[in-house]
Amino acid sequence: MQGAMKQKPDWLNKKIRLQETLKLHKLFQMHNLHTVCKEALCPNIGECFSKKVATFLIMGNSCTRSCDFCAVKNGVPDKIDLDEPKRVAEAVKKLGLKHVVITSVTRDDIEDGGAAAFADTIMALKAVDKDLKVEVLVPDFKGSSSSIKKVIHGAPDIFAHNLETVPRLYSKVRQGAQYERSLDVLTKAKNFNKNIYTKSGLMLGLGETETEVLDVLSDLRRTGCDFLSLGQYLAPSKKHFPVRDFINPAKFTYYKNKALELGFLCVKSGSYVRSSYAADEYLNSRNVE
Image (cartoon, rainbow, N blue to C red; front, side, top):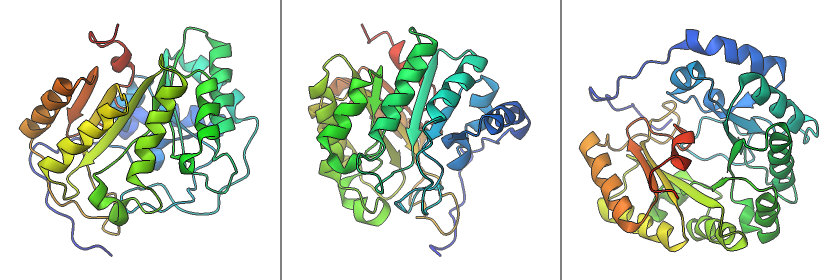
């Protein structure tokens, strides 16, 4: 156990509106699908589900890694379900979505890390609606160039990979990941296709310093990263890595302005911002041509 959880400040008072999630939960259960919204205990689940927006979690809901910040369970994953891309596409069609986010647990047990499943899901979605915008939020694939290229060949509109935190904290909260490797994932994606937007996200409040955050933003821009999300880390339970700091809303505004000065095309920065929150707004930003 990590210890007692810190008292939340007044600005962190969002309540999960469970009633607004029931209809979509039933739809996802009917199609035997998972969402990261539910598995990661996202505080925005009621807001997003009420707008018929969701982030699909493919390849099961058991992760081969056990990062100390994450609510997704660790365990032995199921075999890849080859029919899953079709079911995701059917659910998206029923919901009438125009922007879809696809993410996954980390699958270190598979040779390509699940890259083929991402590509198949993208293509299944595009077959439903060629104008559909598809965003993928991928694991690091252990840095495999062939896996990254496989996802890029699926032609997502946004390729996202989260750095999550500053390099000093990786060994404490992102076990199994490597900071430079994650940066390289974004660099490779952009090199494979200059026309695909890349995106990353950070959780704040893990004990990072302002200098460390600004250094990470500069590192991301050197990869060519276009979009950025910054949000407050909230420990899923007392067993997870504890919150070290609650970041004042004014500080989130400060980081957003610094990021825009560095050249990010769109930045979402705030206490309840998550990597897939308001995902459709990035491509609609006035800075994106």
